[in-house]
Length: 72
Image (cartoon, rainbow, N blue to C red; front, side, top):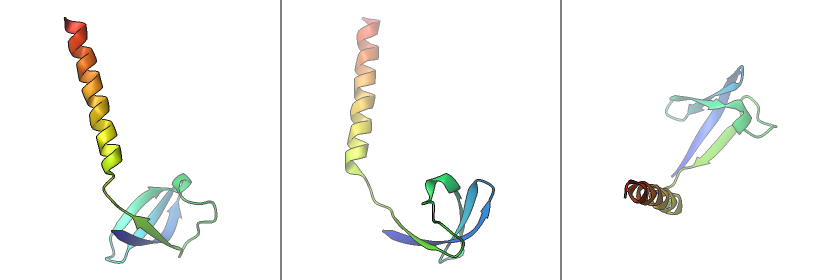
């Protein structure tokens, strides 16, 4: 899913982004490109990252196994 957000304004170290629906999102200014400016439209690609989810599950499993070994 691609969401388009316009940079409405900057407030200190935050950027206020406006969605096409009118919703506002506060975003860290340092997470935008240096040339970001008010009025610029950004595209955000939101997708499920199965690989990242798999890695986190594997990490949790390894931690749990280490804890169980430590108890024995």
